[in-house]
Image (cartoon, one colour):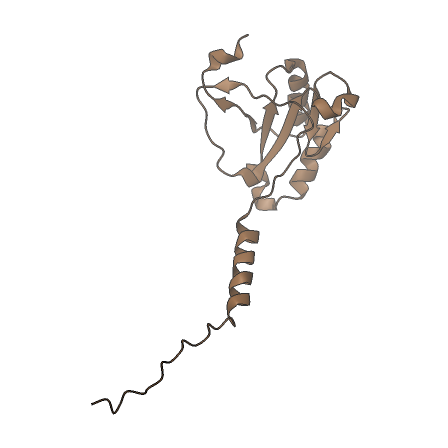
Amino acid sequence: MSKFNKGGKKELPAISTASLPDIVFMLLFFFMVATVMRQNTLLIENKLPYADQVEKLENRNLTMYIYAGKPAAGYKKFGNEARVQLNDKLISDVREVQAFVQQTRANTPQTEVGRLLTALKVDVNTNMGLIGDVKNELREVNQLKINYATLNGDATKNIK
């Protein structure tokens, strides 16, 4: 009966690691594609106001962000007055907004230019005169789709 039973115990074969580099590179490519990098470094204080009727933006790729507020703690060399930030640059003159919009339009596919939206992320303590100047510059270049970014909450929190 034990004629087919060999006397020695067999060891398990070693695990093949030949496909391990393929798996590592697949994971690397997945995370490179799926990760979203931070777009802008804020150089200003940006405490957004609250609003109770808030909608999310549909296509953030077609959104130009304009920030306004007092320079942050590390950037007090720019003064204490509210400033406008475009991308990672504080601007000294509001007329630079027109060049920013035109450059963004030039970098956008022609079929999508009409869908470009300007999102104003304005600090709650910023003077509306500065925002009015920014809106006038946007009108000059016919950028009329403007959105104010807010936090979702009770709007009475904005009153001090």
